[in-house]
Image (cartoon, rainbow, N blue to C red; front, side):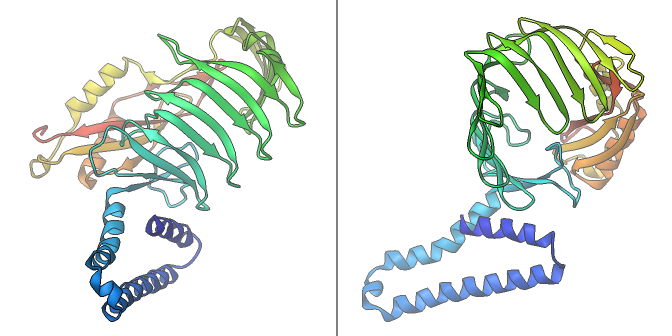
Length: 364
């Protein structure tokens, strides 16, 4: 565990100081590590008690090997501001997947702020994509708990708690399992920043305030009801929406001219004009794999943006397999054509997307 924490701090250090300083730190670390190890052996040889205990000497030999083996089993992934995998140097977060290179049913993972402070800890059923299961804990960068939640097959389910950074309660709620859609949130209790409880037994006034938007309205039996109003800070518009028993009915968006634009859906996600099935068939049909790379086995992950016109832009390789195949995957992706753009509250918007492309032996 010490070795892991040390190398985590080295990664943080490497983002602040010149490379030669990092090399110096690593050199000192290995010198101290080696000195302590061999000094321990020397003391064992000089002390009669230790000479009698071959077990202790064997443990001393095994300790460095154990830490080195553990480090080799883990995988470090860098994440952008949306927690998408990235290869950029200006990453926002770092994820460590424990025992990645072993085969298990579940894997523990830890997300860290760039400062090295813990951000999230939890368990995933898949080591290649986050599919959480069981309890998950999120932290403020100060180290204080922020959210305690539970997952089942990647979906939030059961009890859900939020806290303010000063430790006061913010939200007590529950995610209810739904058959044909994402699980729904049912609020039980809510406290504002002044520690005044405004939601009791699922009823009362609720404010949802974050860096991207602000909205307020009444909850009835734990779900949105009646009229809700708010502001999109990113898109610079205000909105007014009607809910009945938690179900969105209709909404109006108001921009600078103050003219209302009516919408019947909150979110419309981007998709290929002929559907995802056609899209993946096209990718598989058009990918050209050189004969000398026909035995490669792995997955390329490509990130891209669907702009407001439905065009694919800003492509980047998130997980590389081989440079030639990476370039080919981007070529085929860009050749597919336009998508249907995404919308939020009836307004077209840029959407970040990522797709995996599996490469298996014999596909060429």
